[in-house]
Length: 483
Image (cartoon, rainbow, N blue to C red):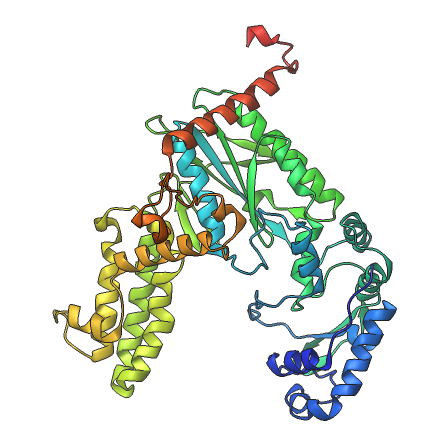
């Protein structure tokens, strides 16, 4: 009901740690404010605490100047606030939302999705992965609906009034080619570029969980990117109708929440149950037909309908060769150290991005990535094409690609065991308990996952879902016994 006041030391720490970006509406530059913040600390702390205790955000704090750019800088997911603490302490976070959370990333989100797809394939079930595309989601958030959602989460009193004041009365101006527009009031949306904006949006879409789960689908989100997973027996002839019904309800929910689903940009992948042949499902949504694709780009990773990630490896290889070619052109003007920094930031980072998804693939599948790393090492030391790379990698402290994948997998397992990983990772890791005192008791070993148990659980859940649906008459008028 009441937001906590902050101490002067906390205000000083936040002020000094912020990126000193300055808006033309600021009375003084941010860098200068950071320099003189110790002298102004008592006044700044008084203003902030007065804002928190009164539940009112000053109007001067809610004005923005918008300058169109090609791409805005990424938010810092490590930023936390009192709302995040409240949601975590009361377990109100959506466990299937990986955006704007500590220890969560696009990689953990993709691993959660591919784990379900692999488990379904092991159970001889076909799966459909649907990648939903939304338009201008942060700008269309309805304030009344959002405030109602916050109240439903138990936020009330002065704390609720503070959020109401935070959202009300916001205005913005646009700047283009030296000209500035008149201020315009914002009646919808959450402030972009703020710490609270993304978190409030994730709470705004929290009720979508019930819509998706009611159709027997599972899902995973990263910010506004929503992935739907539906597994079914290959012989199921009603899969297409169930998928269409789920998408229709999702579209209706989004319309009621002033969000727009783009059917033309929504992508669909069919992962057939091995060794069943691929199925040709065509889904109808809002007078548009969604046809299956052989591959689709998902959070920066190209996924294919065989989960081989061959298209992803091909795309990464192509982009890295292009970067190495351009760096080689300016290599005569760079020192070894500068070249290493450039290669690591542009090339090696691409090899490491979501590389845990490649775990379990044969070595010949990731060999093109190893060729990229070898060429990058030779470029750093400015050596010819066929130079031996083992001593070069050792000198650069670069693990080979296969070892980097194993290292990433082990690191994620370690974090899952020690409590610093997403909850959906912790559920996959079980510490081994010895039946008696052994020397291996203190080695912190894990129980190997039982694929047979995981497969039986998935088959059981699918059969339960089908039995629930056959318990009610269909539009065709068939009795349950006839089906």
